[in-house]
Length: 107
Image (tube, rainbow, N blue to C red; front, side):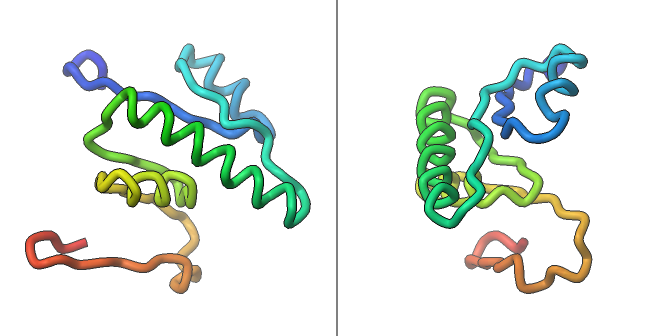
């Protein structure tokens, strides 16, 4: 992508081997932390992760968000009015996604 003039930033959660893989492929990334385990810590992690993504998005000014079903990216892209494309590999999770149509764009 970079060889064609595109710029991107990766934001990743420190989970399992994610950071190891990103480092092994020499992909620069921004950490959004480890996450939370209980309801209370998950709620505050949600705020923390979204604040990190928001901060870098305001600086970077992306044209598009691309994620693997990230609630955090969905919230921030919605706040900033930026198209968010989400990928998923769970065919039976039909209630997980809500598609919005406007008069000019079909999703």
